[in-house]
Length: 352
Image (cartoon, rainbow, N blue to C red; front, side):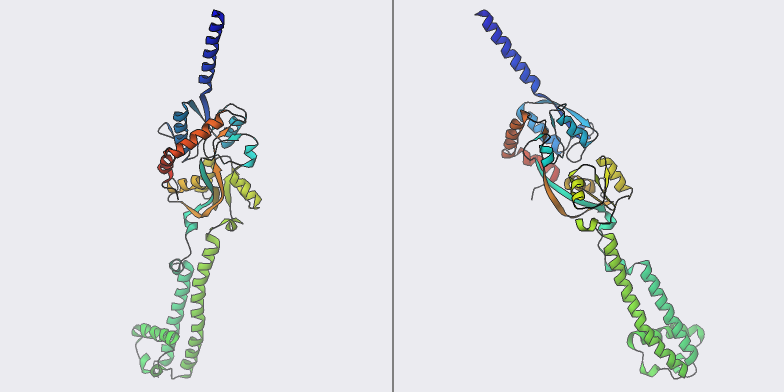
């Protein structure tokens, strides 16, 4: 009887010890602000705060293993060296065959980020301040001044309006030519010499050309600016230098759309290429890019277009993990008691 009692006690302690060990978890993650990163030596981010709330609810003791790449993080879950992974992990059909997921913890999607100057819309002011237009205006002024002075040389002895000295004649002559082009001239100042009348006809006909060039220059500058400078949707990515992260959901999307892109092994390498102006656009997870554009890239990056290819993030577990059900129940409790909403507001503000 004593032996059976002793064996029962030993078995109880063994089970309790095993359960205690099972709850000391290894969590793998990767640096992806604002979901997971290190600030002042502390683990922080939306996913890290949510993990802390889950650990408190489930009485977990856990350690963080921060790896260099997203693929390393997922591999740690697949081979069982990590009990779970958390960051901005999209739940996809392919990944579901390789690991288990919690219920969604965040609704996201893809978006396009472009250099700030590329997000600028073409404007009349920009067209008016263009170098090409200044050259066209300068040529027009030179033609008017030259035509006016040539008319002065023909008409100064026949037309009282042009009866002036050279140093006094340049502006009245220019003004006469400008009025001829804009208003058709004045009847009382009509040229009287044959050469003057011929020149007047030439200036009137030339004015049609000058006005046409002026208008066409503004239109062309705005049109070229709109065509070459703006990326507003996925359809504008064709022919552009596009970047994303290799093997990401964004890379799969671009492949399906036959959009050529440069793949980078990690977020840091992709953003470095963007900062060095090697890329016309970056396609990746909307919250990641939005956070970068609002912080490190606030002077150089802008978000464009809407969010597309909606996707959900989840917590990843090795296939068959007994933790999944407990985590799902805890996530429901965190949503019901307002803890989830509090964490969400901290990082992203009020939800729409």
